[in-house]
Length: 334
Ligand code: NAI
Image 1 (cartoon, protein in one colour):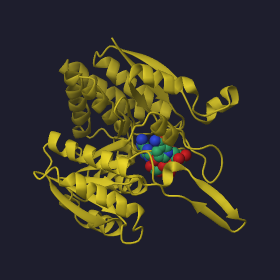
Image 2 (cartoon, rainbow, N blue to C red):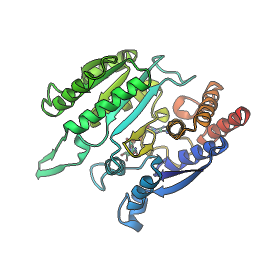
Image 3 (cartoon, rainbow, N blue to C red):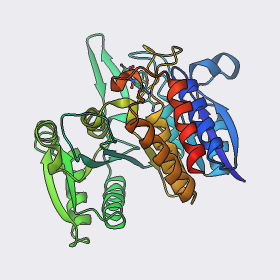
């Protein structure tokens, strides 16, 4: 029996989490879930949105599956997600982005992996009100973090049979901060002659991704550009409902979908659980449950191929109906 932390967020979090747990159970994987809540709902009782118990649980179990947590916009508490990644030093945000079967998109054969630095940049949260009409945010880029994430991207490329790493910056404008990220990537690239290395500015990268995503393989980005570009890549393959993600550090790993708490569709049983399920599949692979991961992915793909889809993909299945359809197919595969 594996012990895994399950961080339950808010918004669509509980619907997609319940769906994914049901599917994992149906696949016969024995997991003892250590259920932890975080976000606005726990502030009243515990005073903070990310209580220490959540961090302690991940430290104990080493692995977590997490659903989205709302962050108030322009005011309120700091992002639970950013805090969690920082406290556990989950320095690599890994977001593989590829076409799923029978999900119609503008481009075929998209297969991009976004590797986003996860601990610094503008997400360090160092901001101040200089005066009533001026605010300031500080962008932190360090050599240590930049080299570490570059090494992660190149190791990932080697281990996953990828051909190219493309570093994405705005080093023409942010000459020192993005300049340091770029310089670090160049240095690490020199140790991996078998992997092609390319440099691109983030604005040009966005334009080219939209025009011809097949030109890209592994993208390596600082935190903010990585956040934005990974949503763009999600759009290329059918939207946030299917985009998976993982936060990986030296000691711990937290798997979660790219999307947020989607308050506009929460509580209606219409959210697509695929992004969370794909993240959970990678979590199962990470824990060595290769067979179960393979079976669940097959059942998911068969469900999509049978044209059973949620509304975000143009279908009419509810989240619960889509989940049941996957479980039915799993039963046949078992
Ligand atoms: P969002 O990702 O929650 O939603 C953007 C759009 O995608 C919405 O139209 C939503 O309905 C749709 N969408 C998202 N997930 C979907 C799913 N599973 N199925 C079908 N449609 C889906 O982004 P938004 O609205 O900007 O953020 C809402 C909240 O989530 C904010 O408080 C934000 O800070 C937080 N957030 C949390 C993240 C996390 O916990 N890792 C990541 C991103 C945002």
